[in-house]
Image (cartoon, rainbow, N blue to C red):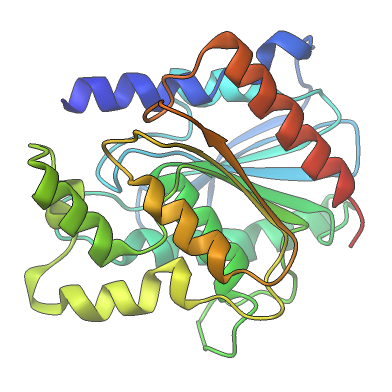
Length: 277
């Protein structure tokens, strides 16, 4: 089951490749540290333009890497104008909510790096798949709430591209338990003694305000790892600009070429529509 999950998450990284020719990027900086832990690292791929895109890998908060084959394929999905930041974060059993705290601090670090590069911290998109979708939502939504965080940013993303991300942690665990899925990644990630507290604090569904950034979600109706209901709950509650791209009858990224074409055009159009701070 876990290998199948990894394969399907990998599919999402190539969804833009058929429409963009990739030209090798210039300056690259690897393993920029935003903390003391070995996983608190960022890779920076400098583009030719002023817009930046932050990529957050998936893997159920238990695995994955910023420089994996899946992530590298993702870089080829965007034109060279984009400045790409690929983020690692702490992962593993009983490590919740480290991943969510880490991406908040990574975003703050990237904001400072962008300013040092002479770029605009107001021209940033955040994108992630699966657990990475959850973490992208955390960045965009938590920064628009009144809740405090040691790494709260002065800027919010232009928009969030959420590819079948978790929006309510507790309900995802219950979904996996009820369905009999053998890889219950939520239960593995979450310490038992404060499960409910972490879900309440770090579920994007409970971070939505009238100031939420624009959000586009991609989700299949038959996803066995992140229920389609997760997307419905999010978009039913959003009052700011949002779009839900539903892929009927499909699971965790097992979309056809035509369906990926539809996803691709939807994401690009949404980004263009929300390209001004």
